[in-house]
Image 1: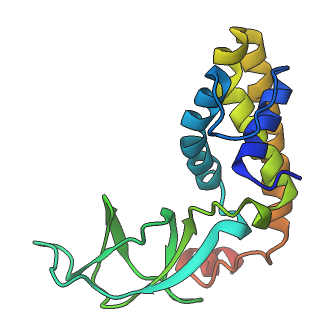
Image 2: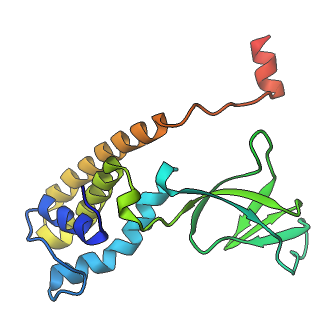
Image 3: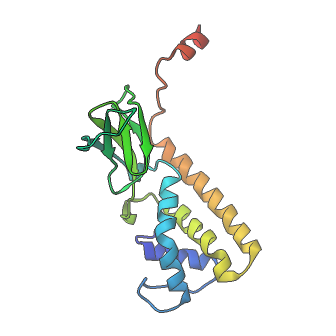
Length: 189
């Protein structure tokens, strides 16, 4: 299993039939390409699903300044926050709105559950690593091979690897409880 960003990018190049790299500091067009594309690819892959290895919980205190209107408090999102998953403790839902890097709410404390920018590749599941390799291969396919059919093949590989990784990752947690709502109560009779 790949244990670093360089290994993920190197394996992506292998999928394209290109030579591997040893470091982002090496010389060459391939190195420059993958070094430039990796940061955005990392964020795109992590944002694509609430991966168990990237989910984090944090209690937020309000900023010293409040929003001008509609909400009583604003909170600065953590620097490593890629995507907000939910606000509120288990069984409770906090109403909020995201504006830029701020979270607005009428609650004075936010219990935030979010996807963090997890750059610790060894903590990733092997299927997530494979999905990241496929995403990088798809992203690099045209610049490396100049082949539209290779882009299509790598897109198919990315889609398949993502589906596999999401399925297994999602099976590791118990199903979410939808709770009681008037609609569910009415449907159950």
